[in-house]
Amino acid sequence: MEFDLMGQAPLQEAPREVHNHGGFNPYVDNKGTSLGICGEDFALIAADTRQSNGGYNINSRYTPKAFKLSNGAVLATTMCFADSTQLVEDIEQRAQLYFHKHDKQMSTPAMAQLLSQVLYSRRFFPYYVFPILAGMDPKGKGAVYTYDALGNMERTSHYAYGSATSLLTPFLDNQIKRDHQRGADQATLPSREQATKLAIDAFTSAAERDIYTGDWLEIFIIDNDGVHVEKRALKKD
Image (tube, rainbow, N blue to C red; front, side):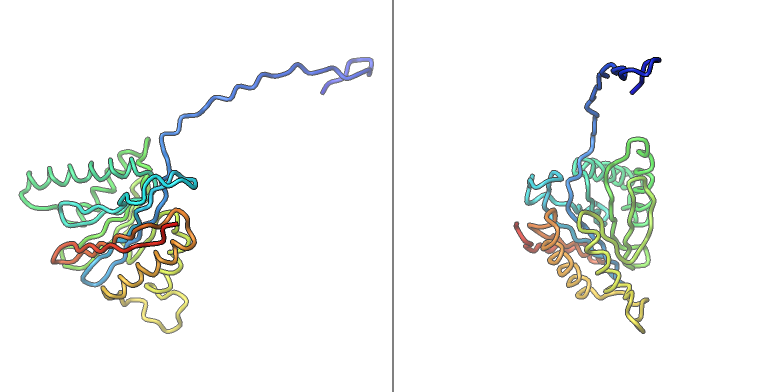
């Protein structure tokens, strides 16, 4: 506020007109959770099926977040469901083109690299997706690859993405990497039964604390014999 030269009453400022332009946001976070666990001769993907709009509304109680691909790998996604389905379609089309050109299925490491390149190619308008890819490598060992939205890739023993990440990650770190366990063998990977039980326990606990995770749990176990799917009920409210 300003004063006149004679030190009299303050001069009134002219009112300013404020324009509030609604911004365009092409993304929506549909929440939910997915995880991947790697074993010696298998890989596991688990994901819930609840789709939310970021609030208390539930769009669907059964919208899968994990998808089996034609080469035997499984791709789990979280965040924007529309981008997830578009990414899966893009990857699957490229895998089919590879098959018809080379007369063989794409290996899991090759698909992992392809997925990284596809995500990076969209870096100026990214897929709002945080994927986990699981499958078998050419040596017959389980492989789990994780990504950010721009395609940075890491092969790891376990990982979790989604709305319950903060609940699942410490649990998996302790039970699989055996962090904070004195004298524990951190190089030993879990068995198939242990990994399945860990996934079930993790999602059962997460569904009690996270309102965006629930309804159904789909577990994909990938081994040299193919992909085995298990479905279990989770908390519905």
